[in-house]
Image (tube, rainbow, N blue to C red; front, side, top):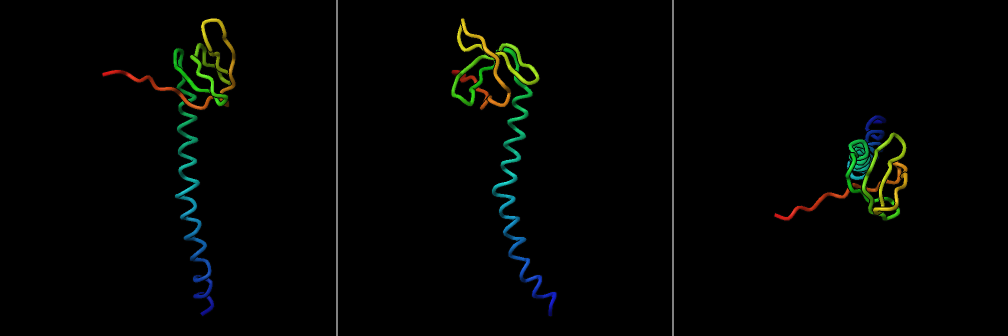
Length: 93
């Protein structure tokens, strides 16, 4: 009878953890993996959006920093950690 009450007590906790894992932890891991893949695949000419809201063009991707061009005159180095996302080109059909 004692093992039955332990199972009854732990079962809701296990169900709660599984729900939490599939609704919070797993999607967050997938998003982090996709972001890391995007950072590794950055190439010259890609357009990116920084965490500060700047749209830039990648000139030279490096290990820790990426050299980007804000406009024709301004070229800066940006930490890889501050790249929010890659801007996809919209092609007209």
